[in-house]
Length: 117
Image (spheres, rainbow, N blue to C red):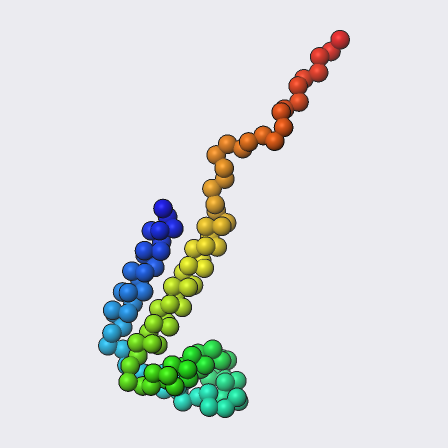
């Protein structure tokens, strides 16, 4: 039951994210990422003192396929990646604190006390 409730919460969160970011337009970093990635060296040149291979590849692919006229694909990737992190955290925590079985079943009969005599 908790898994279904969590999944519903994740879906609602992604839909709410897409709804709240409806008016999003490309900003300063978006343009920088979209302009890079034309050469192999572009992927490995640091930006803001960090390596951004994956974001540049994602922007490059989305801009090449969908162009600059919509931000929906970028918002979908962002919402799904956030949901993926939440699901991974949920599954990790659930595995760590899984409830123990209520009554352990014995594998063999307990030893009988030895009689003295």
